[in-house]
Length: 483
Ligand code: BES
Ligand code: MN
Ligand code: ZN
Image 1: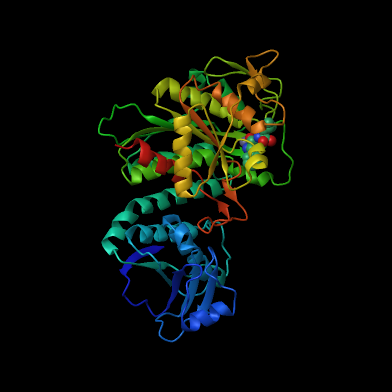
Image 2: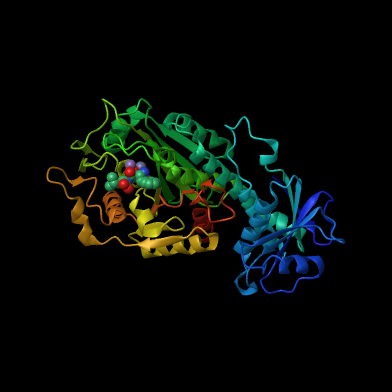
Protein backbone atom coordinates (compact mmCIF):
# COMPACT_ATOMS: atom_id res chain seq x y z
CA UNK A 1 0.00 0.00 0.00
CA UNK A 2 1.42 3.37 -1.04
CA UNK A 3 0.65 6.09 1.48
CA UNK A 4 0.61 9.79 0.67
CA UNK A 5 -0.37 12.82 2.72
CA UNK A 6 -1.97 15.63 0.75
CA UNK A 7 -3.26 19.11 1.48
CA UNK A 8 -6.95 19.14 2.38
CA UNK A 9 -7.62 21.43 -0.59
CA UNK A 10 -6.13 19.08 -3.23
CA UNK A 11 -8.73 17.46 -5.46
CA UNK A 12 -8.97 13.66 -5.25
CA UNK A 13 -7.82 11.72 -8.35
CA UNK A 14 -10.65 10.96 -10.78
CA UNK A 15 -10.61 7.18 -10.35
CA UNK A 16 -10.68 7.24 -6.58
CA UNK A 17 -12.96 6.43 -3.71
CA UNK A 18 -13.41 9.41 -1.45
CA UNK A 19 -14.02 8.49 2.18
CA UNK A 20 -15.45 11.25 4.31
CA UNK A 21 -15.31 10.55 8.02
CA UNK A 22 -18.27 12.15 9.78
CA UNK A 23 -19.44 12.46 13.38
CA UNK A 24 -22.67 11.05 14.66
CA UNK A 25 -25.50 13.54 14.53
CA UNK A 26 -23.74 16.08 12.31
CA UNK A 27 -26.01 17.25 9.51
CA UNK A 28 -24.97 16.17 6.01
CA UNK A 29 -25.75 18.05 2.84
CA UNK A 30 -27.23 17.32 -0.55
CA UNK A 31 -27.01 13.83 -1.99
CA UNK A 32 -25.08 12.56 1.04
CA UNK A 33 -27.89 13.64 3.36
CA UNK A 34 -30.45 12.02 1.07
CA UNK A 35 -28.51 8.76 0.92
CA UNK A 36 -27.99 8.73 4.69
CA UNK A 37 -31.69 9.26 5.32
CA UNK A 38 -32.53 6.40 2.97
CA UNK A 39 -30.21 3.94 4.70
CA UNK A 40 -30.21 4.54 8.47
CA UNK A 41 -26.68 5.95 8.32
CA UNK A 42 -26.27 8.11 11.43
CA UNK A 43 -22.50 8.44 11.66
CA UNK A 44 -22.30 5.89 14.49
CA UNK A 45 -18.84 4.44 14.96
CA UNK A 46 -17.98 1.83 12.36
CA UNK A 47 -20.92 2.53 10.02
CA UNK A 48 -20.13 3.01 6.36
CA UNK A 49 -22.32 4.13 3.49
CA UNK A 50 -20.99 3.68 0.00
CA UNK A 51 -22.66 5.84 -2.66
CA UNK A 52 -21.94 6.90 -6.20
CA UNK A 53 -20.12 10.23 -6.05
CA UNK A 54 -22.70 13.02 -6.39
CA UNK A 55 -22.18 15.95 -8.76
CA UNK A 56 -19.46 18.27 -7.49
CA UNK A 57 -17.42 15.49 -5.86
CA UNK A 58 -14.27 14.73 -7.87
CA UNK A 59 -14.18 11.00 -7.25
CA UNK A 60 -15.80 7.86 -8.62
CA UNK A 61 -17.53 7.06 -5.37
CA UNK A 62 -18.14 8.59 -2.00
CA UNK A 63 -18.06 6.61 1.22
CA UNK A 64 -19.39 8.10 4.41
CA UNK A 65 -17.70 6.63 7.47
CA UNK A 66 -19.16 7.03 10.94
CA UNK A 67 -16.74 8.23 13.62
CA UNK A 68 -19.22 8.22 16.49
CA UNK A 69 -19.56 11.10 18.96
CA UNK A 70 -16.97 13.88 18.61
CA UNK A 71 -16.16 13.76 22.37
CA UNK A 72 -15.04 10.14 22.07
CA UNK A 73 -13.06 10.62 18.85
CA UNK A 74 -9.27 10.38 19.15
CA UNK A 75 -6.28 9.12 17.16
CA UNK A 76 -7.48 5.53 17.55
CA UNK A 77 -10.87 6.67 16.21
CA UNK A 78 -9.17 8.16 13.14
CA UNK A 79 -7.32 4.89 12.65
CA UNK A 80 -10.44 2.76 12.90
CA UNK A 81 -12.45 5.08 10.64
CA UNK A 82 -9.79 4.96 7.92
CA UNK A 83 -9.57 1.19 8.26
CA UNK A 84 -13.36 0.91 7.89
CA UNK A 85 -13.19 3.14 4.81
CA UNK A 86 -10.57 0.86 3.27
CA UNK A 87 -12.60 -2.25 4.07
CA UNK A 88 -15.70 -0.70 2.46
CA UNK A 89 -14.03 -0.02 -0.89
CA UNK A 90 -11.14 -2.45 -1.11
CA UNK A 91 -12.91 -4.63 -3.70
CA UNK A 92 -14.49 -1.75 -5.64
CA UNK A 93 -12.10 -1.97 -8.58
CA UNK A 94 -10.88 1.57 -7.87
CA UNK A 95 -7.19 1.94 -7.13
CA UNK A 96 -6.96 5.02 -4.92
CA UNK A 97 -8.55 5.69 -1.57
CA UNK A 98 -8.74 9.29 -0.44
CA UNK A 99 -9.52 9.81 3.25
CA UNK A 100 -10.87 13.05 4.71
CA UNK A 101 -10.93 13.27 8.49
CA UNK A 102 -12.88 15.67 10.69
CA UNK A 103 -9.75 16.74 12.61
CA UNK A 104 -7.14 16.08 9.96
CA UNK A 105 -4.07 17.32 11.84
CA UNK A 106 -0.75 15.54 11.46
CA UNK A 107 -1.20 12.98 14.24
CA UNK A 108 -4.68 11.86 13.22
CA UNK A 109 -3.72 11.73 9.56
CA UNK A 110 -0.72 9.54 10.38
CA UNK A 111 -2.84 7.25 12.52
CA UNK A 112 -5.44 7.01 9.72
CA UNK A 113 -2.65 5.88 7.40
CA UNK A 114 -1.63 3.26 9.97
CA UNK A 115 -5.24 2.07 10.08
CA UNK A 116 -5.26 1.54 6.32
CA UNK A 117 -1.88 -0.22 6.36
CA UNK A 118 -3.07 -2.64 9.06
CA UNK A 119 -6.46 -3.24 7.43
CA UNK A 120 -4.83 -3.93 4.05
CA UNK A 121 -2.70 -6.77 5.42
CA UNK A 122 -3.26 -10.06 3.60
CA UNK A 123 -1.60 -13.45 3.71
CA UNK A 124 -2.13 -14.69 0.17
CA UNK A 125 1.20 -16.22 -0.79
CA UNK A 126 -0.25 -19.74 -1.07
CA UNK A 127 -3.23 -18.80 -3.24
CA UNK A 128 -2.71 -19.53 -6.91
CA UNK A 129 -6.25 -19.24 -8.28
CA UNK A 130 -7.93 -16.25 -6.69
CA UNK A 131 -10.24 -14.49 -9.13
CA UNK A 132 -9.14 -10.94 -9.97
CA UNK A 133 -12.39 -9.44 -8.68
CA UNK A 134 -11.82 -11.01 -5.25
CA UNK A 135 -8.46 -9.30 -4.86
CA UNK A 136 -8.30 -5.87 -3.26
CA UNK A 137 -7.89 -3.20 -5.93
CA UNK A 138 -6.89 -0.23 -3.75
CA UNK A 139 -3.12 0.13 -3.93
CA UNK A 140 -2.72 3.78 -2.99
CA UNK A 141 -4.09 5.80 -0.10
CA UNK A 142 -4.06 9.56 0.18
CA UNK A 143 -4.83 11.04 3.57
CA UNK A 144 -5.88 14.68 3.46
CA UNK A 145 -4.40 16.74 6.25
CA UNK A 146 -3.95 20.32 7.41
CA UNK A 147 -0.32 19.48 8.23
CA UNK A 148 1.41 17.47 5.50
CA UNK A 149 4.92 17.73 6.95
CA UNK A 150 3.70 16.88 10.44
CA UNK A 151 1.83 13.83 9.16
CA UNK A 152 4.87 12.59 7.23
CA UNK A 153 7.04 12.91 10.34
CA UNK A 154 4.44 11.28 12.60
CA UNK A 155 3.92 8.44 10.16
CA UNK A 156 7.58 7.33 10.01
CA UNK A 157 7.55 5.37 13.30
CA UNK A 158 4.03 4.11 12.52
CA UNK A 159 5.22 2.75 9.18
CA UNK A 160 7.89 0.87 11.13
CA UNK A 161 5.12 -0.46 13.37
CA UNK A 162 3.01 -1.57 10.41
CA UNK A 163 6.02 -3.34 8.86
CA UNK A 164 6.71 -5.11 12.15
CA UNK A 165 3.08 -6.16 12.58
CA UNK A 166 3.03 -7.55 9.04
CA UNK A 167 6.13 -9.55 9.89
CA UNK A 168 4.45 -10.89 13.04
CA UNK A 169 1.22 -11.68 11.20
CA UNK A 170 3.17 -13.51 8.49
CA UNK A 171 4.96 -15.66 11.07
CA UNK A 172 1.67 -16.50 12.78
CA UNK A 173 -0.08 -17.27 9.48
CA UNK A 174 2.61 -19.51 8.01
CA UNK A 175 1.66 -23.19 7.92
CA UNK A 176 3.50 -25.44 10.36
CA UNK A 177 5.18 -27.50 7.64
CA UNK A 178 6.88 -24.30 6.48
CA UNK A 179 7.54 -22.53 9.78
CA UNK A 180 9.21 -25.12 12.02
CA UNK A 181 11.74 -24.02 14.65
CA UNK A 182 14.88 -23.96 12.47
CA UNK A 183 13.15 -22.06 9.66
CA UNK A 184 11.65 -19.65 12.19
CA UNK A 185 15.09 -19.04 13.71
CA UNK A 186 16.46 -18.36 10.21
CA UNK A 187 13.82 -15.70 9.62
CA UNK A 188 14.67 -14.04 12.90
CA UNK A 189 18.39 -14.22 12.13
CA UNK A 190 17.69 -12.35 8.88
CA UNK A 191 16.52 -9.40 10.98
CA UNK A 192 20.17 -8.65 11.66
CA UNK A 193 19.81 -6.51 8.53
CA UNK A 194 17.76 -4.10 10.69
CA UNK A 195 20.60 -3.78 13.18
CA UNK A 196 19.47 -6.40 15.68
CA UNK A 197 21.95 -8.88 17.16
CA UNK A 198 20.59 -12.41 16.85
CA UNK A 199 22.00 -15.53 18.44
CA UNK A 200 20.55 -18.99 17.79
CA UNK A 201 21.00 -21.84 20.27
CA UNK A 202 20.33 -25.38 19.06
CA UNK A 203 19.69 -28.54 21.07
CA UNK A 204 23.36 -29.22 21.93
CA UNK A 205 23.77 -25.73 23.40
CA UNK A 206 20.51 -25.99 25.34
CA UNK A 207 21.51 -29.42 26.63
CA UNK A 208 24.73 -27.93 27.94
CA UNK A 209 22.73 -25.22 29.72
CA UNK A 210 20.52 -27.86 31.32
CA UNK A 211 17.25 -26.83 29.66
CA UNK A 212 15.55 -30.16 30.27
CA UNK A 213 12.12 -28.58 30.46
CA UNK A 214 12.12 -26.94 27.01
CA UNK A 215 13.98 -29.88 25.45
CA UNK A 216 11.47 -32.33 26.91
CA UNK A 217 8.67 -30.70 24.92
CA UNK A 218 10.59 -30.83 21.65
CA UNK A 219 11.96 -34.37 21.97
CA UNK A 220 9.08 -36.00 20.12
CA UNK A 221 9.59 -33.87 17.03
CA UNK A 222 11.97 -34.56 14.15
CA UNK A 223 12.48 -30.79 14.03
CA UNK A 224 15.27 -29.45 16.20
CA UNK A 225 14.23 -27.08 18.98
CA UNK A 226 15.76 -23.61 18.97
CA UNK A 227 16.22 -20.78 21.42
CA UNK A 228 16.69 -17.41 19.76
CA UNK A 229 18.15 -14.43 21.59
CA UNK A 230 17.66 -11.00 20.02
CA UNK A 231 19.28 -7.84 21.28
CA UNK A 232 18.70 -4.20 20.47
CA UNK A 233 21.09 -1.82 22.20
CA UNK A 234 19.74 1.60 21.26
CA UNK A 235 20.35 3.41 24.57
CA UNK A 236 23.14 6.00 24.82
CA UNK A 237 24.80 3.68 27.35
CA UNK A 238 25.04 0.35 25.53
CA UNK A 239 25.86 -1.39 28.81
CA UNK A 240 22.79 -0.07 30.67
CA UNK A 241 20.56 -2.73 32.24
CA UNK A 242 18.14 -4.03 29.59
CA UNK A 243 14.44 -4.74 29.73
CA UNK A 244 13.42 -8.18 28.52
CA UNK A 245 10.68 -9.98 26.62
CA UNK A 246 10.16 -13.72 26.27
CA UNK A 247 7.80 -15.53 23.90
CA UNK A 248 6.24 -18.97 23.61
CA UNK A 249 7.02 -20.32 20.17
CA UNK A 250 5.30 -23.67 19.81
CA UNK A 251 5.34 -23.99 16.02
CA UNK A 252 2.71 -26.69 16.25
CA UNK A 253 0.95 -28.01 19.33
CA UNK A 254 -0.65 -31.42 18.79
CA UNK A 255 -0.82 -31.81 22.55
CA UNK A 256 1.81 -34.54 22.30
CA UNK A 257 0.96 -37.89 23.90
CA UNK A 258 -1.93 -36.09 25.68
CA UNK A 259 -3.15 -35.50 22.14
CA UNK A 260 -5.72 -32.85 21.28
CA UNK A 261 -9.03 -33.64 19.52
CA UNK A 262 -8.92 -33.39 15.70
CA UNK A 263 -11.49 -30.59 15.49
CA UNK A 264 -9.72 -27.27 15.12
CA UNK A 265 -6.28 -28.69 15.69
CA UNK A 266 -5.02 -26.74 12.66
CA UNK A 267 -5.34 -23.65 14.85
CA UNK A 268 -2.36 -24.84 16.80
CA UNK A 269 -0.07 -23.58 14.04
CA UNK A 270 -0.44 -20.20 15.73
CA UNK A 271 0.69 -21.46 19.10
CA UNK A 272 3.84 -19.44 18.45
CA UNK A 273 2.03 -16.08 18.42
CA UNK A 274 3.57 -14.95 21.71
CA UNK A 275 7.03 -15.37 20.26
CA UNK A 276 5.97 -13.66 17.03
CA UNK A 277 4.77 -10.62 18.99
CA UNK A 278 8.13 -10.44 20.74
CA UNK A 279 9.93 -10.69 17.40
CA UNK A 280 7.63 -7.99 16.02
CA UNK A 281 8.47 -5.76 18.96
CA UNK A 282 12.19 -6.10 18.21
CA UNK A 283 11.44 -5.40 14.54
CA UNK A 284 9.71 -2.10 15.31
CA UNK A 285 12.28 -1.04 17.92
CA UNK A 286 15.06 -1.52 15.38
CA UNK A 287 12.93 0.01 12.61
CA UNK A 288 12.43 3.24 14.52
CA UNK A 289 15.85 3.15 16.22
CA UNK A 290 14.43 3.19 19.74
CA UNK A 291 16.74 4.60 22.43
CA UNK A 292 16.58 1.66 24.77
CA UNK A 293 18.39 -1.62 25.51
CA UNK A 294 16.16 -4.63 25.02
CA UNK A 295 16.68 -8.39 25.10
CA UNK A 296 14.15 -10.77 23.61
CA UNK A 297 14.17 -14.54 23.84
CA UNK A 298 11.90 -16.97 22.03
CA UNK A 299 11.69 -20.71 22.71
CA UNK A 300 10.86 -22.52 19.48
CA UNK A 301 9.65 -26.12 19.60
CA UNK A 302 7.16 -28.50 18.05
CA UNK A 303 4.98 -30.60 20.39
CA UNK A 304 4.44 -34.00 18.72
CA UNK A 305 3.33 -37.49 19.74
CA UNK A 306 6.05 -39.96 18.83
CA UNK A 307 8.06 -42.91 20.12
CA UNK A 308 10.61 -40.42 21.37
CA UNK A 309 8.06 -38.00 22.83
CA UNK A 310 7.92 -37.07 26.51
CA UNK A 311 5.19 -38.80 28.47
CA UNK A 312 2.76 -38.00 31.26
CA UNK A 313 4.62 -39.17 34.36
CA UNK A 314 8.05 -38.11 33.12
CA UNK A 315 10.10 -35.90 35.40
CA UNK A 316 12.05 -33.11 33.69
CA UNK A 317 14.89 -31.15 35.23
CA UNK A 318 14.75 -27.48 34.28
CA UNK A 319 17.71 -25.14 33.93
CA UNK A 320 16.80 -23.63 37.31
CA UNK A 321 17.45 -27.03 38.89
CA UNK A 322 13.77 -27.40 39.81
CA UNK A 323 12.21 -30.69 38.75
CA UNK A 324 8.82 -30.96 37.03
CA UNK A 325 6.49 -33.93 36.93
CA UNK A 326 4.64 -33.96 33.61
CA UNK A 327 0.95 -34.62 34.14
CA UNK A 328 -0.24 -33.50 30.73
CA UNK A 329 2.03 -33.11 27.70
CA UNK A 330 -0.44 -30.55 26.32
CA UNK A 331 0.59 -28.09 29.06
CA UNK A 332 3.82 -27.58 27.13
CA UNK A 333 3.99 -23.80 26.78
CA UNK A 334 4.81 -23.27 30.44
CA UNK A 335 7.61 -25.86 30.14
CA UNK A 336 9.15 -23.89 27.29
CA UNK A 337 8.78 -20.61 29.17
CA UNK A 338 10.23 -22.07 32.37
CA UNK A 339 13.66 -22.46 30.80
CA UNK A 340 13.46 -19.37 28.57
CA UNK A 341 12.47 -17.09 31.48
CA UNK A 342 15.06 -18.59 33.83
CA UNK A 343 17.79 -18.24 31.22
CA UNK A 344 16.74 -14.67 30.53
CA UNK A 345 17.05 -13.49 34.13
CA UNK A 346 20.17 -15.57 34.77
CA UNK A 347 22.14 -14.28 31.80
CA UNK A 348 20.86 -10.71 31.34
CA UNK A 349 19.78 -9.55 34.82
CA UNK A 350 17.04 -7.40 33.24
CA UNK A 351 14.95 -4.69 34.94
CA UNK A 352 11.91 -6.80 34.24
CA UNK A 353 10.66 -9.62 32.06
CA UNK A 354 7.39 -9.64 30.14
CA UNK A 355 6.43 -12.97 28.60
CA UNK A 356 3.76 -13.48 25.95
CA UNK A 357 2.13 -16.81 25.26
CA UNK A 358 -0.93 -18.46 23.78
CA UNK A 359 -0.87 -20.38 27.01
CA UNK A 360 -4.34 -21.56 27.99
CA UNK A 361 -7.79 -22.24 26.60
CA UNK A 362 -9.00 -21.16 30.05
CA UNK A 363 -8.11 -17.52 29.39
CA UNK A 364 -10.60 -17.58 26.50
CA UNK A 365 -13.26 -18.83 28.91
CA UNK A 366 -12.37 -15.99 31.30
CA UNK A 367 -11.90 -13.06 28.96
CA UNK A 368 -13.14 -13.96 25.48
CA UNK A 369 -11.34 -12.82 22.35
CA UNK A 370 -11.00 -9.07 22.79
CA UNK A 371 -9.02 -9.02 26.04
CA UNK A 372 -5.76 -10.69 26.91
CA UNK A 373 -4.91 -11.62 30.51
CA UNK A 374 -2.14 -9.86 32.41
CA UNK A 375 -0.58 -11.63 35.40
CA UNK A 376 2.14 -9.77 37.26
CA UNK A 377 4.13 -9.72 40.49
CA UNK A 378 4.67 -5.97 40.03
CA UNK A 379 1.97 -3.28 40.09
CA UNK A 380 4.02 -0.66 38.29
CA UNK A 381 4.82 -2.96 35.39
CA UNK A 382 1.22 -4.18 35.17
CA UNK A 383 0.00 -0.57 35.24
CA UNK A 384 2.36 0.42 32.44
CA UNK A 385 1.23 -2.51 30.29
CA UNK A 386 -2.45 -1.83 30.84
CA UNK A 387 -2.09 1.90 30.14
CA UNK A 388 -0.29 1.14 26.87
CA UNK A 389 -2.85 -1.49 25.93
CA UNK A 390 -5.69 1.01 26.25
CA UNK A 391 -3.97 3.66 24.12
CA UNK A 392 -3.22 1.16 21.38
CA UNK A 393 -6.58 -0.60 21.35
CA UNK A 394 -5.08 -3.95 22.39
CA UNK A 395 -7.03 -4.41 25.62
CA UNK A 396 -5.51 -6.21 28.56
CA UNK A 397 -7.14 -7.23 31.84
CA UNK A 398 -5.30 -7.77 35.11
CA UNK A 399 -5.68 -11.26 36.53
CA UNK A 400 -4.71 -12.47 40.00
CA UNK A 401 -1.77 -14.58 41.18
CA UNK A 402 -3.25 -15.85 44.45
CA UNK A 403 -0.61 -17.45 46.69
CA UNK A 404 -3.07 -20.03 48.00
CA UNK A 405 -3.37 -21.59 44.54
CA UNK A 406 0.36 -22.15 44.25
CA UNK A 407 0.20 -25.43 46.16
CA UNK A 408 -2.07 -26.79 43.43
CA UNK A 409 1.04 -27.46 41.35
CA UNK A 410 3.02 -29.18 44.09
CA UNK A 411 3.90 -32.74 43.05
CA UNK A 412 4.16 -36.02 44.98
CA UNK A 413 7.53 -36.90 43.50
CA UNK A 414 9.09 -33.72 42.07
CA UNK A 415 9.29 -30.00 42.93
CA UNK A 416 6.15 -29.29 40.96
CA UNK A 417 3.79 -30.67 38.34
CA UNK A 418 2.88 -28.99 35.07
CA UNK A 419 -0.91 -28.81 35.59
CA UNK A 420 -3.35 -28.20 38.41
CA UNK A 421 -7.13 -28.61 38.49
CA UNK A 422 -9.16 -27.35 35.52
CA UNK A 423 -10.83 -24.45 37.34
CA UNK A 424 -8.58 -21.38 37.27
CA UNK A 425 -6.35 -23.01 34.65
CA UNK A 426 -4.85 -19.73 33.41
CA UNK A 427 -3.91 -18.78 36.95
CA UNK A 428 -2.14 -22.07 37.66
CA UNK A 429 -0.25 -21.70 34.40
CA UNK A 430 0.90 -18.21 35.42
CA UNK A 431 1.85 -19.40 38.91
CA UNK A 432 3.94 -22.12 37.28
CA UNK A 433 5.92 -19.56 35.24
CA UNK A 434 6.30 -17.39 38.33
CA UNK A 435 8.36 -20.17 39.90
CA UNK A 436 11.01 -19.53 37.24
CA UNK A 437 11.26 -15.74 37.54
CA UNK A 438 13.65 -15.80 40.50
CA UNK A 439 11.82 -12.79 41.97
CA UNK A 440 12.53 -10.45 39.03
CA UNK A 441 9.69 -8.00 38.25
CA UNK A 442 7.65 -9.93 35.72
CA UNK A 443 4.41 -9.92 33.79
CA UNK A 444 2.84 -12.72 31.80
CA UNK A 445 0.37 -11.96 29.01
CA UNK A 446 -1.87 -14.88 28.07
CA UNK A 447 -2.86 -14.06 24.49
CA UNK A 448 -4.57 -17.35 23.57
CA UNK A 449 -7.83 -15.48 22.90
CA UNK A 450 -6.49 -12.45 21.07
CA UNK A 451 -3.74 -13.75 18.78
CA UNK A 452 -6.08 -15.07 16.12
CA UNK A 453 -9.38 -13.39 15.28
CA UNK A 454 -12.11 -15.10 13.29
CA UNK A 455 -14.35 -13.28 12.88
CA UNK A 456 -12.45 -10.11 13.68
CA UNK A 457 -14.32 -7.33 15.50
CA UNK A 458 -11.74 -4.66 14.72
CA UNK A 459 -11.46 -2.95 11.30
CA UNK A 460 -7.64 -2.80 11.56
CA UNK A 461 -7.44 -6.58 12.02
CA UNK A 462 -8.35 -8.72 9.01
CA UNK A 463 -9.56 -12.23 9.93
CA UNK A 464 -6.64 -14.36 11.05
CA UNK A 465 -3.42 -13.33 12.75
CA UNK A 466 -3.93 -10.12 14.71
CA UNK A 467 -0.34 -9.34 15.63
CA UNK A 468 -1.65 -8.71 19.16
CA UNK A 469 1.01 -7.43 21.54
CA UNK A 470 3.38 -5.64 19.18
CA UNK A 471 1.64 -2.27 19.46
CA UNK A 472 1.09 -2.35 23.17
CA UNK A 473 4.66 -3.38 23.97
CA UNK A 474 6.05 -0.82 21.52
CA UNK A 475 3.94 1.89 23.17
CA UNK A 476 4.98 0.91 26.68
CA UNK A 477 8.66 0.85 25.76
CA UNK A 478 8.39 4.22 24.01
CA UNK A 479 6.53 5.97 26.81
CA UNK A 480 8.18 4.45 29.87
CA UNK A 481 11.61 3.08 29.09
CA UNK A 482 13.20 5.16 26.33
CA UNK A 483 15.38 8.05 27.23
N1 BES B 1 -1.68 -23.88 23.13
C1 BES B 1 -2.60 -24.34 24.10
C2 BES B 1 -3.55 -23.23 24.58
C3 BES B 1 -4.50 -22.69 23.56
C4 BES B 1 -5.77 -23.19 23.46
C5 BES B 1 -4.13 -21.64 22.75
C6 BES B 1 -6.66 -22.67 22.55
C7 BES B 1 -5.02 -21.12 21.84
C8 BES B 1 -6.29 -21.63 21.73
C9 BES B 1 -1.87 -24.87 25.32
O1 BES B 1 -0.63 -25.44 25.05
C10 BES B 1 -2.72 -25.93 25.92
O2 BES B 1 -2.91 -26.93 25.29
N2 BES B 1 -3.21 -25.69 27.13
C11 BES B 1 -4.03 -26.62 27.79
C12 BES B 1 -3.56 -26.72 29.23
C13 BES B 1 -4.18 -27.86 29.98
C14 BES B 1 -3.67 -29.18 29.44
C15 BES B 1 -3.81 -27.72 31.43
C16 BES B 1 -5.46 -26.09 27.73
O3 BES B 1 -5.65 -24.86 27.78
O4 BES B 1 -6.36 -26.89 27.58
MN1 MN C 1 -0.77 -27.49 24.55
ZN1 ZN D 1 0.34 -24.79 23.40
